[in-house]
Image 1 (tube, helix red, strand yellow):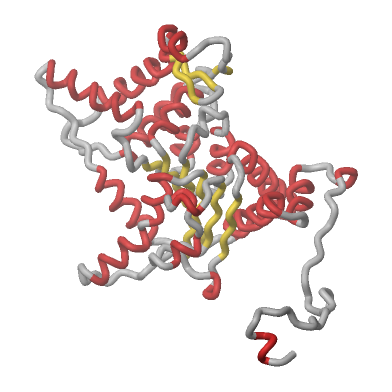
Image 2 (tube, one colour):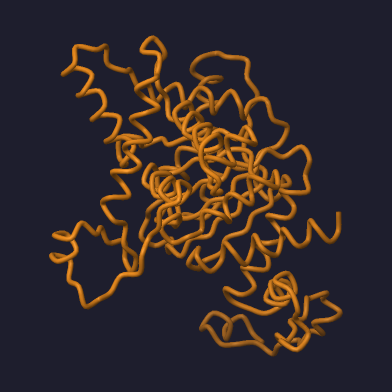
Length: 356
């Protein structure tokens, strides 16, 4: 074809390639007759298309993190995942040594404490409107109810722990969550995130601590201390930041497993920029560490411009992740985490059991 035709946007006479010779990977039909386990299903989904393929690829990334003995995995949690009854899936990740640190919203930990202490959440009946729910003391989270009595129960646990806190010791979220986990380990039989975290020595951070039921409980406790002329407890979120950074600096490789986005994701990912600033602006002799692995389950689209939907490729530009060209391995699954999380974790746990 002449240059004159090309300049007007005409097509060309294509040279049709052989996809096998080009080493393209063929897809496979999802054959349910051959599936007997969760892992069978997730592997088969990985050979299909769209979100199903993302689920399969996500399991591969999590398996790679789990099998890398030099990888320290941070799990970030946002959204109402414990209200949605996913707490034991997270506890499984802790109990099997796959997750080594948790960064969470405070609400998620508070609702998880309700569950871990033996209380229940309930299905929302649409016949009750939100005014009726308020008057009855039922707090609605989409299609699920958190009775206010549950939160009163949580407050009593937190108050008991804070009552015995040494006022000379500054409070930080990872310290308080460890104390709550110790209480659960010693006093309740139910499983839960904070209980597993305590027993496996996994730190749990809540960066936006005051934006939570437990944060309000802490504020209430200090008001009672003032009323009774007792010294108030001091809270310092920067103790969390420093402890998190020093913990990650000790590791060989880093991975992050993100559910949702929000503050937990950003706070965890800012580790790389924080270390760079300590080196570049502060003159500290520290290694410029970044995350090698990343897996996120979140349906948030990128075009809203928020962090929850931003891809890992964007985070590379901030110095948060090792690029794929240098060995970074990432998976992004655009699906409700109540669907994606149990499928991916269930498949990986089967792989680890069956293949050593």
